[in-house]
Amino acid sequence: MWPFEARSYLGARWWTPAVAAALFVGVAGCLPLPDARTNTPPLQATMRVSPASVPSRAVWVPGASVPGTPEDMNGTTTLRFQLAEPADTIYVAVPGLFGGASAFAPLARRLVASQPGTQVWALDRRANALEDREPVRRALAASDPAPAVAAYLGTGDAPPTFLPPRPETHRFVAAWDLDVHLRDLHAVVREARASAERVVLLGHSMGASLAGVYVAWRSPDGLGHAQVDGLVLVDGAPGRTGAYGRGRDVRFAGVRLLPTEEAVRSGEAAPWVTLGKGGAQFAERQAAAVLAALAPEEDAPAHVRPFALTNLAYGGLMHDDQYGPLNQFYASIGEVQGAELDGNLAAFLVGGPVAARSASVVGVAAGEERVGWRPGDPRFERSDAQELFAAWNDPRADVAEWYVPVELLRDLAALSPDLTDQDAFVPMREVPLPTLAIGSDRGLLRSHGAFEAYAEQRLGSSLSVTILRGLTHMDLLTARDAPVVALVARWASRLPD
Image 1 (cartoon, rainbow, N blue to C red):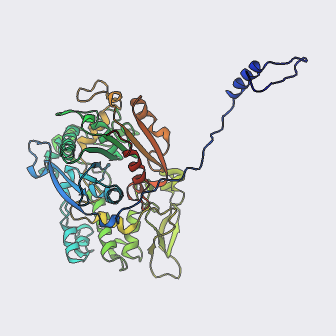
Image 2: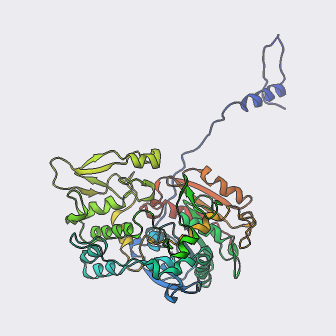
Image 3: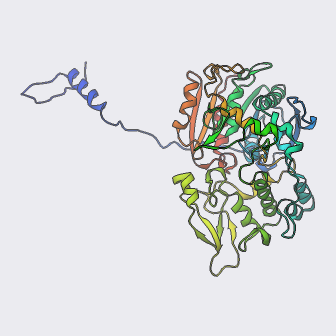
C-alpha cells in the first residue's frame, strides 16, 4: 500500500497513487537527476620508516636472446627497492614512453616504507643500456657537476662529448620489437614470482599499455594474467597510451611520426625515436639535474642560459610543469622567483584549462640580480624538486629512456585494443585479473570516461577506476603526499589470497 496519496485537479478528477507514481517516473526521465555525493576524505598512507631510508639495488635480469644483440644488452636492469624483511608482495613497475626505472623511485620508496613485506622492482628497458651514464658517475664521485656539464651541455668552446649510439653500429635495435619487450618483462615477472607469494604488475603511461598487453599475452609459461595476481594502470591503458589498432604506418594529421620499417632496415633512418633533439634533449635535462643537485645556488653555466639564474632555477625550468609546452608530462616541483614572466600560449593550446597557471620566463625581474627557485604553494606544487633530481642522478638508471626503439612503438600502434584475432594474445575480455586504473584531472586520462573503452574490453572483470585531483602525469609517481600509494595499498589489501 502506498504511504501517500497524490491529487491532481483535471476536470475535478482524483488520480490514484499508481498513476501519479507513473507520471513522476515519466517526468523524472526527462530531467537531470541530482548527482548526490559526500565529501570523501582522501586516503592517507602512514609511513613505517622514512621513505628516504629505503635502499635500492640494481639487478640484471637476462631476457630475450636477440641475434646480433650484444649479450650485455639482452635483458633488463631492475632497480629493487626493499627493506631487510621477507617479501610478501612484489610490484613489478613498467615505465612509460621515454621513461626509465628511476621514474618510480619516489613512489617505490613510499610503497615499501608504508607496507610491510613490500618490494618494488622497477624496470629499465633494454634500450636504457644505450645511454652514456659515465659523466653522471664521474660528477657524483667528485661532487662536481663539471664532468656532466662538459659531456651533456658542452663548455661554450667545445660541443657536448657524451657518446650517443650510432645507427650504423646499432642496427640490432631494429629487432627490439613488442615480442622482445614482453619476453624481457616475463623474465622479471618469473623471478619475482619465485621471490614472493604475490606479484602485482604496475605500469605508468605507455608502461600501463605494455602491462595491460602482457596479461593477455600467451607467454612461454602460459597466459600472462596467470603469472601475476593483480594489475595497476597509472594514467595509461591499452587503447589510450598504446595498442591503437592504427596499423604500422603511424601518422598524425598526415605527417609520419615513425620511420617505415624499410627505412630502418636499410639504414636510412635510426632504429630509435629521433623526434625533436632525440637523446640530446634528455642529456640536457640530465645535466640540469646534476647542476641543481650538486651546486643549487651557483650561477648556471653562461652558455646555456639567456639570463642570469641559479642552477636550481635552471633545473626547475627544465623539469617543472609550469614553464614548458607539455605541462602534464612534467612534475610540479616549485616556481621561479625574481623572474619576469610572460604568457605560455603553447602550454594552454596543448593542455587546455590544466595549463592555466603556465608562464614563460623571459628575463630577470626589475631590481633582481638573477632568477631563483622556491618550493611554491604546496596546493599546486605537489612534488619535491631535490627528490626528483636525486632520481635523475641515480648512477645506475635515470628517469628517462633516451632512445626508444621504433619497432616497439610500431607494434603497439598496430595492435588492436580488444586483441581479437591476434595469435599471440587472448582477447582482452578473457583477462579476469583484478585491476586498478588510476588517472588524474591534470594528467593524460582525466576522467572515468577516459578509461571507458578499456573497461568495455574487460566487462565482467574486477576493475576499479579512480581519478585523483591536482596531479600531473609525473606527479602521480613523485607526489610527496603519495595518494597513489595509499590507493594501491588499500586495493592490494583486498586481493584474493
